[in-house]
Every structure is written in C-alpha cells, then in structure tokens.
Length: 492
Image (cartoon, rainbow, N blue to C red; front, top):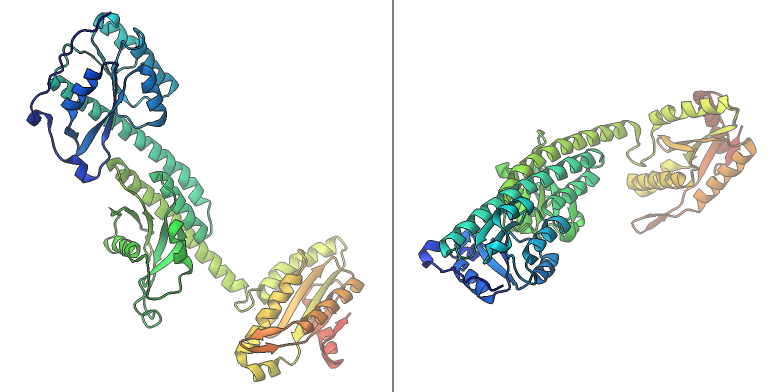
C-alpha cells in the first residue's frame, strides 16, 4: 500500500527554543528515528535542529529499517526517544520492533513514539493497549509545532524515569556498600574500600585518595612548604597511589587535588568541580576527612542527594573504624613491647598461664626459657644506646622467626627474653635452645657502617609447674649458664 503524504512543516526558528547548549558540556539527548522514508529523516532533523531542553542539545540517529534499528540499539543504550514508523519491511515491522525493545532488550525507559502514515494498518486503540508505546501520531497531523511539543514531553518523561532509576540504583549501592565498609577493621583497608565503593556509585574506576586532617603543630619546620601539610593520606588508588609513599616535601604533581581536598575540609561540604568529586566526611571528632575521586564529568541532581546520604553512612563507618583502631593501639601499647614488637611481660603472663594449664591437663612436656644478652652493658658503652636498641630489635626479630606456631616469646625486661615452648621434651629443649644460642652468635647486626655480633646465655626449666615457678627455675639456670662461661645453655 502507498504511504500518505507528510505534513511535517517546520516553524520559524524562534518557535523551537534554539540556543548554543553544546557549549555547556552536557551530553545531548539522543533520539533514534526508525523510518524507511528518507524525507522523514530530513524533515525531522530540520525541525529539531538547534532545539535544546534543559541546556542539552538533541542528536538524531537514523535507521531506515526495523532491522537496522535493532542493530543500532545493540551497541548504543542511551536513547531517550525512538520515533518509529509502523510499516517498513513488513506491515507490522514497527510493532515487532517495539516488542524487541521492551521484551528482548528489556529497555523500559526509552520513550517510543509511533508515527504512521497509514493509521488503518495499526488502529490507535488496539496499538496503545497491546503494545508498550508512549504516544501515537498520524504523520498527517504531526506538524512541526506538534512534533516539537511531543518530543519535549517525551524527554521530560524520560528524564523523570531515569531519575527514579538512578535513585533506586544509588540506594541499592549505598545499602550494599555500607555492609562491606562496616566489616573492615584496618583504616587503610577501610579507606580503599571507600574509594572503591564511591567509584562504583559513579560507575568509574577508582582514581583518588582518602585523607584525614591532621595537626600541623610542630610540622612546619620539619616539612617547610610541603603541599601535604595538614593532610594525612590514608589510601590512594589509580594514578594517585604514589602519594602514599611520597617523600618529596616541596615538589608535588598533585597540588590541584590537594587544593580540592583542603577546600572541602575548610568549607565542611561536598565539592563537585573541575572533574573532581570530593566528599566531606564528618566523623564528629576533632579531625575531618575527605574522599576524593577524579574523572567525574557530570553529577546529576539526584546523585547529590544520594551522595549526602552516602557521605553520612561512610562518616559513621569511618568514625567506628578510627575508634576501633584507637582501641587496638591502646591495647597494643599495654601488651606489646614498643622496641621489639614482641609481647611484653604482662602479655606473656596473659598468654602463658592458659598454655601451661593446657599442657598440665594433657600431660604434655613443656619448656620455659630465659635468655640474656651477654655483656650487654659493653654493647651500650661501645656503640651507644642506638647500638643497644639495634641489638635488641634484631634479637627480637630473630627469635620471632625461629618460633614454632605454638611457641610464645616476649621481651621480659631490659636485655632479657622469655620463651614458652609447649610439647617439647627436656632432651629436645636442650637441642632446640642450643641451636638458637649458636645461631645468634653467628648473626651479624648492621648499624650504620659497623658490624655488631653478640652472644646469649639461656636457662631452661622443663619441670612442669606454674609459669612463675618455671620462670624462677629458668632464671636460676640462666645464672648457672653465665657462671659457667656464658654463650651456653643450662637445662633443669
């Protein structure tokens, strides 16, 4: 059947809301025109050229058959409107195209406007009821003014649908990411998680930092002119990873990024400008924090609202993480020797009593050893306290590396160390600790340009008693080892 003539006549430019929208840098609205008549494409382009809606221009993409339209939609997913003819390859090609878009491709957001020159081929009532289209126009009635009105109305509807969709997806991402963030204990791991989750929110790869405000008191003389002054980088990803290990106090290639972070902290608000998204994280403590991502080209109005929610969730999780780490730090200060990183005497008692109780219950042989650096005062006198500290740190690391999984070693005090070795016989204990004694004497400790070598004496108690009693017996054996010439092991 022949097609009816078109009635698409353009109005004057002033009626079509012309403006230079492209200069604002916003992505244009994309409209797919699916029609087998070239004249339809030409007239549609003429009418809609120069039209803008909400400071966004319109771009038309042409398909001259339903099949060609399908191929375009397979590679391009962001069309706002489809202007669709009914009769093309077949009398119902357009209607079949609608089913493909809605059912097979699952695209419920794009607005489909059916334009037909032969209304009898597709009666309006049945088409509206049976097919998921959003408007139906006969080409004979679709003047330039009506096409303009129809397109703008469809764009407004599409914008609302996408807004609701973005809100739903954003809330889903917030809920999903919050659970993950609350599971993280380390501040560094938490911070990396924040960058990952925020980048997922924007649909970009992680490219940014998370930093914490810190006091600058006493820092100016140490780092004069440092661009990082006042900020502590907790995590960095992408091209910013070098910030974590930066040692240059004056030269910084990321000054623009740091300026954005400081601006957000100073103004206590989120900032979105120059491709940066900076979330101000208020932890309700004395120090503020910001998460910054780069490469964010456009932030929708709905995203701003969601990001406010997201920022509050992240801030709460960050506050909990900081609190947790403070508790861990306080606990470590009470139980860990600051110099060697080994458990201190207090922690040795906490760990040792249950171990010995278990060994006694299960009738397992156990050894408790006390070891002491021979002539340690001479080490301090010769190499200074730095030399003494270097020896103790080295010895602590050496002992830690020689431990079995079940053993516990601690710095007992001064140059004394204590080791609990469960499930070891007196004969095995003699061999085990003699090997340690020998290997320590062969170790070379490097201090600046000086090599230091030490020897140790070890006293071992193997008679299963209380921890205090076994430490007392081991101390007695240690005294015997020193009296016997040092650099040796005595076992009771």
